[in-house]
Image 1 (tube, helix red, strand yellow):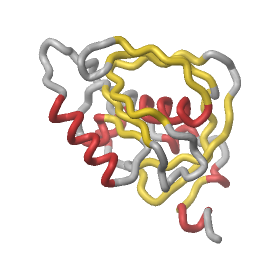
Image 2: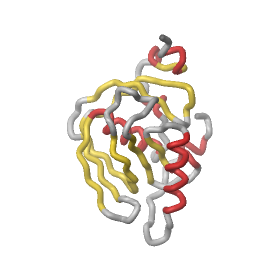
Image 3: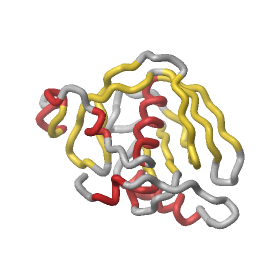
Image 4: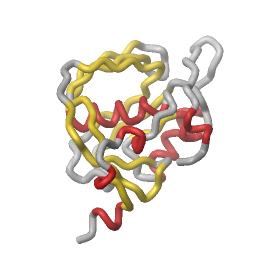
Length: 162
């Protein structure tokens, strides 16, 4: 956070011009090494509209249901209801901090997988939150920009003291 590069809007992926294999492998390795729920290409300095997300279990979000591992390229998100829910979020680009962010609870997302095959899913709850969080990075948005009440923003170890 604070790096002006993370505020850039990413460019669409052109499947005919770009080999994504190395980029996706690097993103998987980075996400796994940091116990992330997802990662956007801009977080590793590549300003293309590509995100990855998914996990069976995640120590950073122990109550969260599993999310299938997905490579999502050139995503489009459509809210399927006006209902939003507040939830705690963290980010690999904002280390050590957590904040409560409102997100749509039910969305449709579409885009393409690494081979250029169409993806279209309706999802809810934490899955929907993760997708919205990661796709915000593609538009230069970090989760603290969406916090509505800064009483619920701070260092993880202070907020979640036992």
